[in-house]
Length: 285
Image 1 (tube, rainbow, N blue to C red):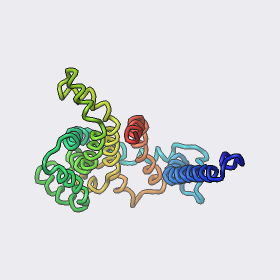
Image 2: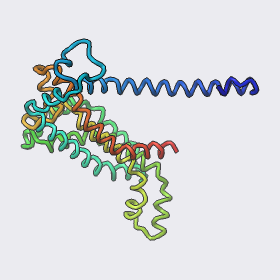
Image 3: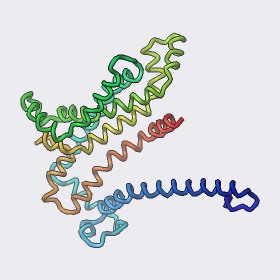
Image 4: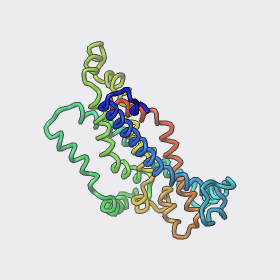
């Protein structure tokens, strides 16, 4: 080890030793956090691709032996699963689109324009998250019934958009604030209009932050269950359908359902991960 070299002065050896211990501590913490997140996912995936008899056995196997799609087929063939999956995808993508369309100009305005009460506006946006969904869902259900839009995927998408907008606006605003305004001014000096400068200069630099806000909106909508249960009956989303079936479901259904709930979010993050890495590099500069 470098810090054990006798030729180095004692103070330098001690400094190298402390740096090595700090680095090893960071690595150990990262490994523990990764295991904390990945181990349950691995166990759920193992049960999802085991036979139904192995799922019911004890102790549970750490690897599927044999690998089988019997449990997943049993889950997918259950009543209402495929239709509710389609409903969840529609609601999640609608939430992503609506929240991005609304949060992008709102975040730009908050980050770029100085006006009286800007801090109060930020606090007001954030305070929306202080209202629990339990309090909002029942009045909204009554309102949707009166408006004739109860048990609709689009009404549920509107509610999910309202839930994710505060966080999306603040995330996108912080990313816009990290882009120097001088870049827009330089683009306008070279002939761009303010709109052209926004789309040609600012937007490419802020796509990682917008993508991160989109991921948050998609995952939040995909996993949300309480409002989906109260606001839908025949058009249930997948979490609502699984919750409705849990009391009479078997263990294979539960494990396969848990894994199936993870798949769209993992796939979505996999394809958009380069924007997340770009955002991390931009924020740490």
